[in-house]
Length: 371
Ligand SMILES: Cc1cc2nc3c(=O)[nH]c(=O)nc-3n(C[C@H](O)[C@H](O)[C@H](O)COP(=O)(O)OP(=O)(O)OC[C@H]3O[C@@H](n4cnc5c(N)ncnc54)[C@H](O)[C@@H]3O)c2cc1C
Ligand code: FES
Image 1: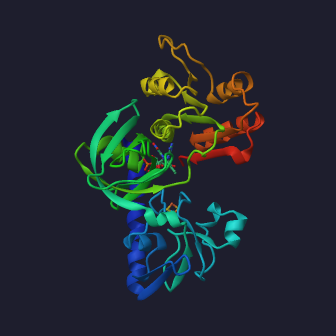
Image 2: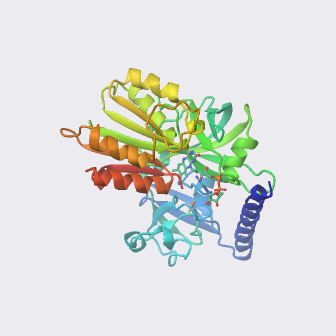
Image 3: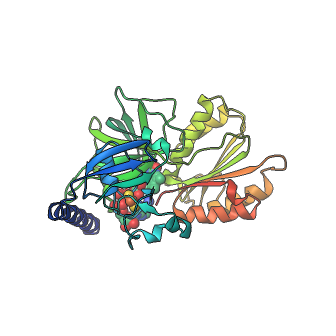
């Protein structure tokens, strides 16, 4: 229990300190009103100076992605700044490639708005909305993954399967400020007034502890999105999808979307890795999809099957299972192979190598890193 409380307390104190420093800076230095020019005159805002760009934009209803809630630890809030705001901070450089440094790409959560500023952002961010949703249901799909379904009421969401939403986690216990985390949407895009996510518990994690231990059916919660560029191509290439745990989410959405949009005949191989049967879920849902999508093949594999599991499917690491299927079972003579990877950076890196070794070119591998 102490192990769980310590990281929560440290994160809470760090959040309060950061907010305190911003307030002190705003009071001590009165920056007055400043102008933000977005996409060369496409939009303009007059705001009070002094706060980080990310917060300033969101207070005006313009939301940039933020998978860490503005802590400078995810790199999701990148945007190009076209005016002089000083050199990159040490907190920004680890997230920047040499090209991005040259191009003045910045982390919006780290750059303060102190004078008139110009920025460039993708146009689709103009469509990102904040939803005040109601929790319709919370189900345990495994011992550490919850399926949470939100009802959007009169609002509707418009998204491509593969995109993610940010949950706004309110202050609770020792966590004083609100924060945000990214979760891939597992719901079908056709269902426009509901959003479903799969949340795996990270011991001591702020958002996942909140969702697993505090969130209740009927409660209200703010969601911001949709974000992201993980999506399937509109081609007839063979899709090789690989996931484990809550990495199931975007693929559940994509497969159901293929049903809804009549994309019934595309060849899809979905490798799902789990340690034991306790970590395996949605087996019945996948069976139904295999019946409805004639060229969809679900390949669940266990790396540590237990005695008494009664497991008849493939065993071993998902990388080895993927490798053997690519060598022995998947015929790609006439079609291009595309890789779709979702989960931890380690799993993505290892599967990416297996794909490359088996002829899937790097420009045909797409991924969504959960960290
Ligand atoms: C684009 C995107 C989509 C995502 N989609 C999903 C999704 O569909 N389902 C889902 O469950 N998660 C998803 N994540 C991860 C999610 O955003 C959070 O990072 C995760 O749930 C942990 O949040 P937390 O606040 O509980 O932990 P934090 O309080 O942020 O972290 C607590 C500690 O745990 C470590 N940690 C953080 N994340 C993980 C992890 N995943 N595994 C192990 N240790 C970790 C941190 O380094 C830190 O030390 C996604 C992330 C991204 C970037
Ligand atoms: S919001 Fe995570 S780095 Fe800026």
